[in-house]
Length: 383
Image (cartoon, one colour):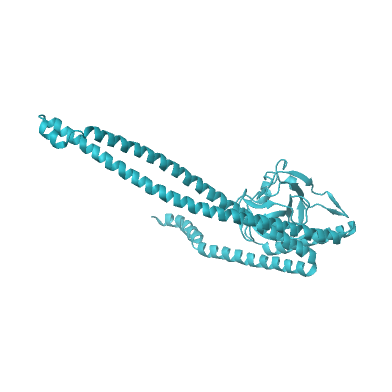
């Protein structure tokens, strides 16, 4: 290699070494950054919840009741899934049992045929055949035929024995699965009762809050406190996430107008619509059936996953570049702080937490401190 060629290769070699060398350290730094973020936001969430408990006993009671509803729903869903799995195994075992019984019937018919053939052929003893046959070749064929019959009978008997053993095993497995299913069904019924009880407690807590509000002025004061709590939370999250790494893919700003809606449903409140007393909606509300899956419209990182006054079970995704999306009034939250989410991934289910009178999703898009109209970000209509 000439000196000139060596000089040409040197920058490439340096670039390779630079790219390859710090990778383990970069991965460790990223892991430490994520752990620190989770710890700081976790502390922020705990502080907010403790402050709520000290400041507003009735709101804290509603929070606890709605958390219990979410936990009961989660346990019920898990019990339902386990029951469905057991039903699937029972169906498979029942199919195997029916197939084994059919095979056993076929094997028994084959054995009966072999025995019938042996009986018909066995009217002349082998010794008599040996003495009476003059053609050795024919005699050999007869003995070969007898050998086939004997092996066929032995094989049929072995097959029947194996099928009987398999039937016994299947019956034992079916018995075990039926016992397991009975226990799972009982657990599911208990979890269903627990869910109904949790919803009853939520109804009482919500009734107590509504009784305290009493007037429109008190309701507006409550809305202002809730709006202030959200702004305080978002400001704290912006500080905590400033300088963090953006998710892979296009920057969030470039997908404006092309995002899929997180749920389909009827819009019950529009961005900028008056809420009374000078307050306006900073997002939109979409009515949907309870338990409807809420999907992340774009990749990002969860920076909040907890209860907040006015929005109930709230999940916030940081998409990088100062953009965040908010999802409120959920029944269940499937993602925790620090978890990465992909576009289309289920992050929550629609509910009525936060004191709503019907199931709906609250959706908000933030660029820094400024709320933006979600309709400009999502394609078409949520219906």
